[in-house]
Amino acid sequence: MTQPLEFEMSPAERRRQKVRGAILEAAERVFSVEGEAGLSIRRLAEEMDYSPSAIYKYFGSKEELVDELKEAFFSRLMESVDRAVIDSLAFDVRVKVCFKTYIRVAAERPHHYLAAFSSLGSAESDTKGEDWADFQDMKKGQAFNMVASLVQEGQRMGVFTPDMDPFQAAKSLWASMHGLALLLIHMPRFPELMPNAHGVVSTDAFTDFHVDLMVRSLQAAPVSSSFPPGKNEPPDV
Amino acid sequence: MTQPLEFEMSPAERRRQKVRGAILEAAERVFSVEGEAGLSIRRLAEEMDYSPSAIYKYFGSKEELVDELKEAFFSRLMESVDRAVIDSLAFDVRVKVCFKTYIRVAAERPHHYLAAFSSLGSAESDTKGEDWADFQDMKKGQAFNMVASLVQEGQRMGVFTPDMDPFQAAKSLWASMHGLALLLIHMPRFPELMPNAHGVVSTDAFTDFHVDLMVRSLQAAPVSSSFPPGKNEPPDV
DNA sequence: TCGTCTGGTGAACAGTGTTCACTAATTAAA
DNA sequence: TTTAATTAGTGAACACTGTTCACCAGACGA
Image 1 (cartoon, rainbow over the protein chains, first blue to last red):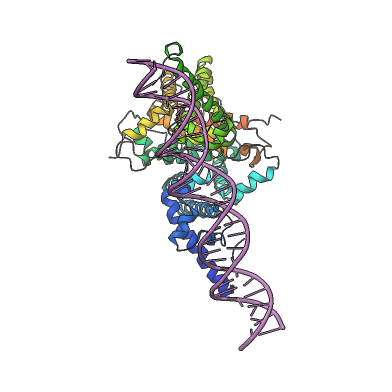
Image 2: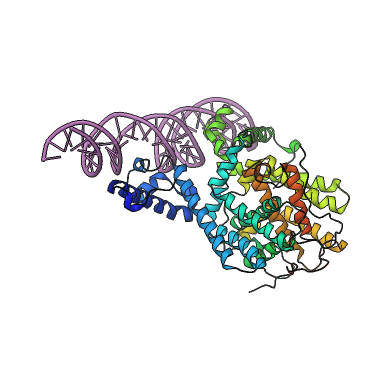
């Protein structure tokens, strides 16, 4: 998986990796501002004074190239979240900073985040490994695991209600996080532009609000009102 | 906006609308299973025994055609939600059925829903009308308004906490709804495949769980624990 | 009946991703 | 060091795409 260290590469291999990196860099430059639609092999080749077919000596297809961009982005995203979480000590700020960092970094690179979720998964994949493998390869599983362990920690501390599957809760939280990130990407200023009762609300303030609601939904329920608290749904199979 | 009624159209106009409808029908057929990528003007023309350029007598561009498919889908989506909400009497089942219907219908037509949210909005739109106009045109605003009025109703009934802007709450709920719909589209069986503490969880059961959490986050907070309840963020401008 | 408008055609333009035969150079082996 | 083999890079081509344009025939209104 990981490429060999630099000093144990032949000069040829080292030069090859250098060119490969240059291609990825140029691709990243274009992709960041114009997305997959604006990134064409021919344009990329022209920008590097290469022939289009030269690119294919380094990448099997355009999809392969873009996949590498997406994977690199997801690594940066996870790294950002990790760092933000580690730097925070108190539990409550840790969980909130986790969500907020994810949403902010995702919205900062809209094309990357969008591209990573723009293809729809095969609906009839009998081989249950396929989706899940892709899931871990793309490091999306890492986000899920981090959220799940945060929920468990909250439950151990008695801050979150114990009568819910932490994995289910993590999925739900992830969906809410994902949803806001994508809404911010698709309509960048929708928190400001859409109606508000009390004047304009900045995107940051709205993100805080959304994350607050997400966290509130997990808190230990002191009394039950007309809505039953989230309990584990029994598997209906 | 609305086309003239059938009996007040000239025979020519009626024939024209008939062909136009046939094109849209064929496009819908292809788009439903293969999405925008699989829908090409040439293929469409071939399927109807037309020349490719004939399509352009009825639609200015491919984008215009696809936009009409997306708009029709959103109309169906909103109609489904409306009908589901109207058929329910009790407030709690009404709000849950609203969310669940939205998510289900969106996930049933993944290509449509994905296409409607696949283009990223212009980040630097100074004309604040642009995003908002697109918003109402695509009938996405209708979803928002429905959710907002549900929140207000819940607040009037005392079921939802009164100290939060119902519009902000509606945006947050919409984001959570949107997020789950897109996750189900991108990884259709992620509720089953991802880890669970208590066996396999069906997609339906997980949707119920997610919606429960969404609703719980709005409930009137009896006592405040370590997390402050969602209050109106003051505008910071 | 005559002119105008419109539906439909085929060819072409400018793109796209990708492949393939072909050099030229660089590397590994003798 | 000379030779063989592998590889980097090229340009042309294929099969697509959306879109336009000149043209033609038939239907329409005057």
